Length: 380
Image 1 (cartoon, rainbow, N blue to C red):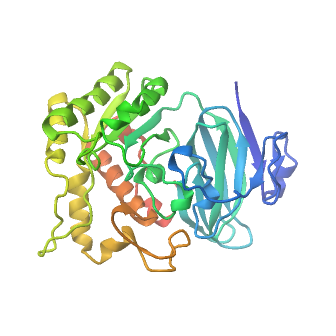
Image 2 (tube, one colour):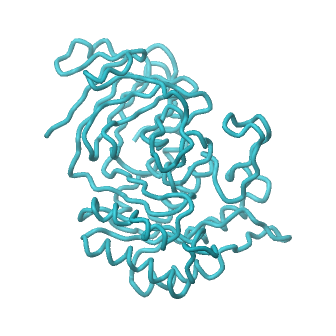
Image 3 (cartoon, rainbow, N blue to C red):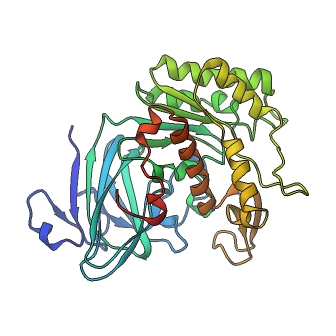
């Protein structure tokens, strides 16, 4: 079944072309037509409900474009810019996944950008904001042959709910660094270990969807370290559980990749990051070598990055906020484990850099080049 939508939003030329549907930014969602803009009654604070809308992942919520579509992967192409004025646009999809960040264009300049979006719940959701957002059209086409990047991990990876914004997992940001040839399905959940992710059948959910040519990134340790039912021992049960992810992906013709946990924001007196993960980093590294599976040393890369920034500057990477700075946390925050949106983008950048530098295939093929283009919002 070929699902295709072509919306002309601020493009008079296309309003009259066959196959295009005129859509105004104030056209409300209509369940009969199956598309339109709407505003959520309130932001969601329940991560497991997965009911957040992308328009709520901004300091000031904006309307969300809802399009009714079946489960699967889609290629979304957005035409940005304005004939009359400069533009600066950010685009988010689904559960706060950033597709485009602060994309600036001069007056009279328009650019088409394409992204892959994974839909699980029957609605493709998009939101557009920014300093001067300008969008001319949106084209959506079902892309069943696109591979999917599945993420298994904990709260540092997960799709944080909109009511927790600006808390963010790096899995919400990794799409910034991917081409439109692979979609992201972030199955990570807060509080989960390599063990509990399996015992709660979350890995089984991935197995039901995983196909040959898909990629599975696995990052656990933060909760394996805890003394509870989800806890594991680094050189025994931790490695044993991780091997189940590796074997299961390979059995299904997919590509497993292990990602060591990034460090927390704890410095010693010399300004060096302290390792709060014990032997879990080394245990994952040894397993990756033994199983000959690609390994992203996010622990080492984050240590270098945090130490280069220093103790004060890393507060902007983690979620430190003064009272009144964040609407969702009016009393302020001082968090040394979880990330702000800005921080999650930088962690996702580290992951992408590791993939490219190590030539981890097939994932390296799907990385945008140069990655620096996403910093300035330049076109492909």
